[in-house]
Amino acid sequence: QRMQFREGLQHGWFEMLLARNEYRSYCQDSGLPMHEAAVKKWCESIVIMICPICPHWSEKVYKKIGGNGYAVLAPWPVAGEEDKLLSRQAKFLRDNLKHFRAQVGKAKKGWKESSIMVTDSYPDWKVETLLWMQGKYDNGFPSDFMKQLKEKCKSIQDKKLIKFTMQFASFTKREVEDVGPSVMETTLPFDQMAILEESIAYLKSQLNIENMTFIKLDDEEASAGVPDRMKESVVPGKAHMWFH
Image (cartoon, rainbow, N blue to C red):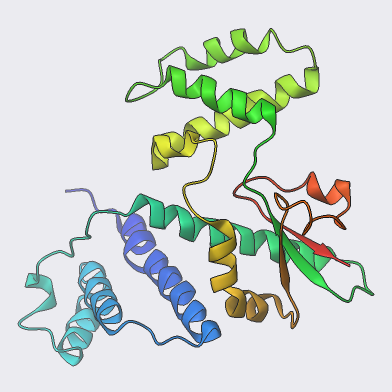
């Protein structure tokens, strides 16, 4: 009943194009073929979803991709159940690539090697905060969660740590509400190193870097040469580049 053309264009067109561009870039840079069924599903879905706004174009394209009848009468696309873990893995790669681009842009000239550092270990204060949040969660957080969090932080002596704890808990709360309680796990439910290593061709192409290595900071021998100031920038879920 409401003519929400702006929202229709945003979700039925622009976001679909962004998803296609990201998938296409990953496949091209990784030397992988795009999945035929996924491409066909994408084409049918975008044509049907944009039909209320661009009916003539939709009908023409719908015929070209082998659609039966008319796009305006076609069933509305139905997405399968979201694999939240897979979505989280994709977000991990997407967010870290954005972070790496910013680092490459700020890197000082003269570096010869680039390494991506990851860790599976949270600092003790984050582990304590996550465990506390787990105890407060029961199919949702209590309505006075922030009040309880402020009360908890009164026992912390370091004022900076109070600020960090509040920020971390608030961010994690939003992530839990969006993704689910798995966000509060003290270890990530996926292998960060495996995702990055599998995507090395994609990362090299996107960052325009020929040589790239990976360092797991939990391995003392492998991370022996990494400066402490660099290690402090790495947390589970957020990798960091080291130019040396």
